Length: 227
Length: 158
Image 1 (cartoon, each protein chain N blue to C red):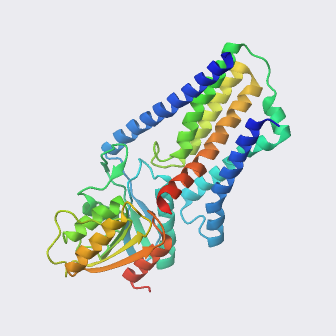
Image 2: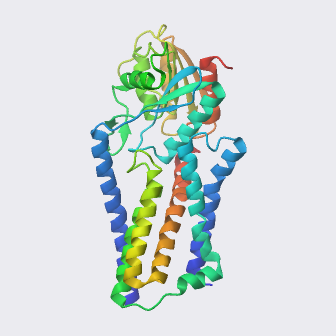
Image 3: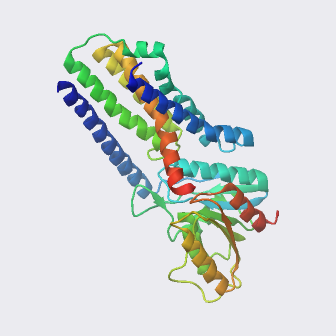
């Protein structure tokens, strides 16, 4: 009985530790994100300038976003890209995470200036939450300053889509066929863009919600003219 | 051989396999160091995930099981301290970006937590129990990311 009580006490302390540490970490992260702590990484030294927008992320990159950056670095090497990686400076509805908001295009400009000086044009590639934010800018025809737009695991559609997207630039979307929470956004988005004469391409791959190397390679190679 | 050691050691083996799959794939593809922060974290976790596998060794079991007697209150305090620090160690490697903009700093934080708790445990219940607690912390820190990332990937990415 005494051993059981001791074991239960240890388990209770562990559970309390998990909850308290996670809560404290989220409070610190929320404070630092709300305080505008961001930062821009520059990956690759290629001749084509690109800005990458991450998905919902923590204060620093999560394991998934670290893998996305590895994919970005591989793509940069393979396709001769130089990639600027800004960090969203706005808290998500859950304030310990970073999300993109209506400052997406200004974040792209700032990141491009930081990594490339004053480039003639940049393309933009985005994943998940970043893809929804960038897709929203594209569908309003606000992304015309970008050479092209590439989205992974996201789309947009909702309020505010321009009647005609003829002159609004090129866009390509990579979407996993098993991405049950996001795929319909992409298919609806592509249908809406095609109905409005946008230059849009959809690349589907066998997988879920991920920044798939092969699919993003196909998308980017098409957009930068290396296919 | 005690069943608890076997289960923990087997969990370590599973975590080690899961931790090394992306490393081996990256080495085969020639892109392990394409993004150094990830490579450094992956390699560190790959090494840490080997630590719980030691539980399968009889010699290590004998070493870990050997502990000097201590007052009951101190032993309970030692276990609670280890338990508290284990939850922190698992958070540090399971979500290294949650506290740090540069996620590799989480490894330094983990080393600090393990070292500090080792010293406190040493003073509290002696070196043998301190070593066992530190081994447990490092093991849990090594097991957490491969298991958590695999569950996440199976749920969302594949």
